[in-house]
Figure 1 (cartoon, one colour):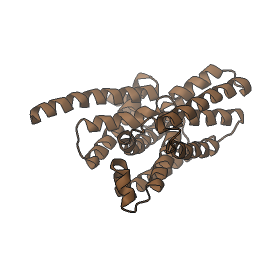
Figure 2 (tube, one colour):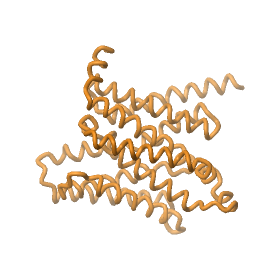
Figure 3 (cartoon, one colour):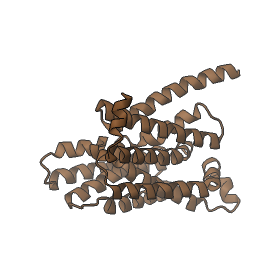
Figure 4 (cartoon, one colour):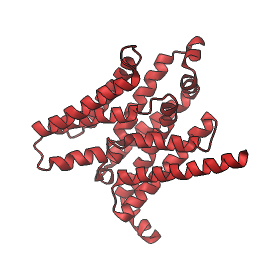
Length: 281
């Protein structure tokens, strides 16, 4: 099996898939801890549906680079979700459900009415659950992913203290003079960028797993925010790398395999946390 793996690693498309997959998983895990603690983890699922709707429009318009449309639309909806969710009439969870369902329905409707593809069901399935496009990445797409991933990591590191404060006590952060709204807006925009990057990796229906599972796994073992963040990043990278390798060797869908690996890691961490808790008592 190792010989077969080394044989596959000689091909550039396999190396590209591993680089992109690991970077996307890393970025997802960093923001995932904050989103889970703020009870806003479902925003990943909502924005992924928005990205699906935008991707449907891009497909109908025959855009060669659909990110030119998908990324701005998803970022705009992330801002709208934040603004709408802060109002008394429409709470955050209701706003996410409203926008995500509408985007998913209109996206599928547009693909049915306007699409000229001969394999509509296949296009929808690959968009929802991920496709083999992660194994057909070009060098320019890999460079774009690396640039956006580095930007996400740099923003997170530079704004770590602000993100920490907003995550645990937003009212106290405001009382100290911190602009919590700007920090929340930054989190929403960075989350939207991550969602768009992850569309080709796991599909729009499985993106929230990259955000939620590493964070929940890390919370079973670590207690501090810094510890959970670092542990979540490690779990995400290991699971993404393992999932892609297993997918290539076994011929299974990339996105589903990565999510299955995350689920297995969560189960192991859950049992490990209980054992550590029992020993501690």
